[in-house]
Length: 322
Image 1 (cartoon, rainbow, N blue to C red):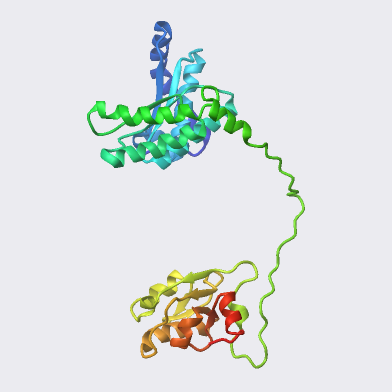
Image 2: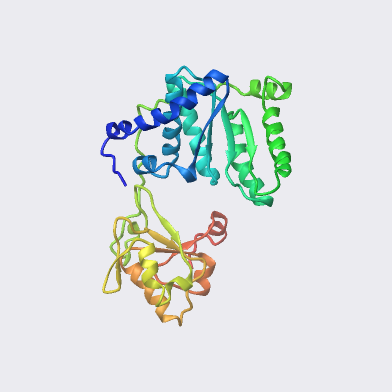
C-alpha cells in the first residue's frame, strides 16, 4: 500500500485516471449521453483510502476528481451520487459535496440514495432518514430508494418522499410559499467582539467545618456524574474510579483535573454494606461531593453528604436539613 506524503504526490497518481476516463467522456459527449459520477462509501479506491481514509471527505474528493476530468473536456452532462449504507455518512457526504460545489461555483444535479438500505421497516426508515434529511435541506434532484426486496416495492416509499419534498416548494405550493414568507428575517444584533467572562462564587470553608465544600464544584463549570449503589461494590469500584476520571495508586482514588467534581445518588448503599460505603468514603476523602435527595438522607444518613431538595421542600421545612 502506497503512502502519500503530500497532496502533490496524491495528484500525480491522477494521470492514469485521466487516461482511462477520457475515451468514455468523449463517447458520452459525442452521443449526448448523461453520466452519473457515483462514489460508494463501501468501495472507495485504495488510493483515496490511503490519503483521505474511509471518510465523507474521501468520497467527495473522489467525485470532484472525476468531475474535473469531465469539465476539462467541456462535458457537463453529469449528475453526482454519493451513496452509503450508513445514513449519517451519506448525509454528511452530500452536504459536504454541496458545500464544495458552492465554493467552486458549480451547479450539478444530485442523485440521492442510501445503498442497500435493507428490507421492511428498517430499509424504509434508513432511506427516509438519509434522503428525507437532505430533501429537507433543499438538496437533491432525483431520488432512489434501494431495498433488498423486489423492485416494485421501492416505488411507494420513494414516491412518498418525493411528494413530501414537492409539497415544501414555494414555487408549486402557495401554502408553503406563505409559510416561508411569514418567517421574519433574522438580524443578529449581538456584539461578539466584547463579552465578560462569567465567574461563579463557590462556598468558602469555615474554620469549624470538617469538609471543604468548595471542592464539590468548579468555578469554570462543574461535572456531576450519576452513579448507583451496585457500582460501588468491591469488584466494580476500580472500574467506577476509572470512569469518573480518578487516578489510582494501590487501589486508592485520587482526584485529577479530569475527575468528576461530584456524584449524584438517588439511593445510598445500606448502612451495613461496608464495602460499598468504603468505596464511597474514599471518593469523599479526596474532595468529591456526594449529592443525595434529602428524603433518602433522612432514611439512610451519610456524613458530609449534600442534601438535595426543591425550593418548595426547603420552605416547607423552614430550611432544616436532614
